[in-house]
Length: 444
Image 1 (spheres, rainbow, N blue to C red):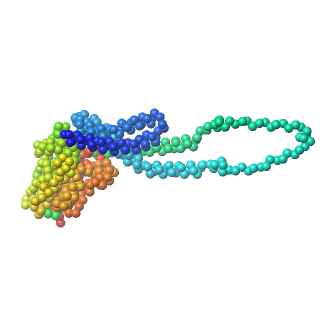
Image 2: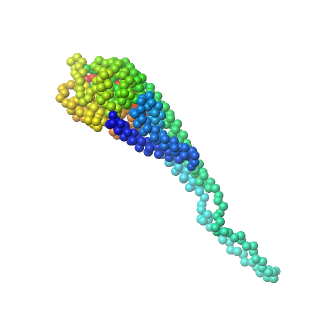
Image 3: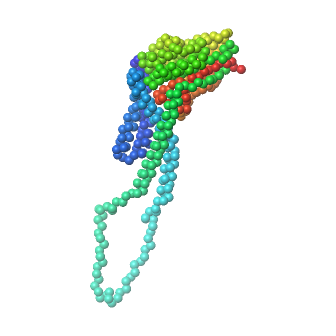
């Protein structure tokens, strides 16, 4: 429990640092640039600080509080996390047109600016020499009216700087227009993403040819589901829907490839209970994901066994159909190394009969490097959520070899599920949830 709590707090700290930087950018563009100094800027600043604290508080508190209480924190915290993300993305995209408009305005100002007074030199006309007449000679000279004295210490009357006011108004107009476009775009995107995330997983069909597959195993169907993420938002109803859809497919076996839960057995045991109703010819199997190690891995593995789901902890089982035999193996997630439960490919795959194919369950796609070295025919993974919030998928590709779908790496096929749930925001953009039926055929 202590390790789980420390891991949660460290993760919340990382989230806090990242969100603080993003909120600083949002404050500049949505508060400072759109307001004059005064009350509304102060209100916006306070709101930005409060909102910056919301996501890390949500991450930490939702794991510590009872599910019924955590739900009230999770919804606003994680929805704001999604809105924050898309506000920042759209504002970054708008930086280029914003810069171009500013340059255009400045060029227009320079072209209409009047020439400096010093550059215009007036023509000097010599004063006429008065002629001396008798009358002027006899009359006494009267002194001219003196010029009024000017006090050098007295400033000239101030005049309103109309050009500076026009510049300020233009900046406010541009900033407020960008803020309006950004807000409408972010709210619309998050609304669309919520309908995807909460609408339930779609069914994906994939056929994978295996070079050593016995003809009697042709057409073997594996229901692959990952990243169900039971927690304060997704509960028992979500599990029941996933189980129902899998059972409708009538698979030969079920592979749950990690990240089933975001909380302890005491919190989420009732939500996971419908897993006992999974139905398939050869059974249901499970490997750990990184979130199991944040949620109390040992109690969850015991609970899954009680529900009839068999964990594969660096081990394998034989799937026999007629004269054909398939090795189904599973390795722990890489996060387990921090809790003395690291993945062990040699233990899971060593000493097997290499004349028959092997399918490996491994939560993270990056584990395929070891799978290739051990001659795995097909690896089933999750973890990525397909990116969940596009364009975040571009960053996921920097860490994982495949974001979603089927790809071949050397002689090993790698299939990555987008997952049936979500982590954090109940939002999916460009990555709808899925359950996949993988159909095995002999390679031609």
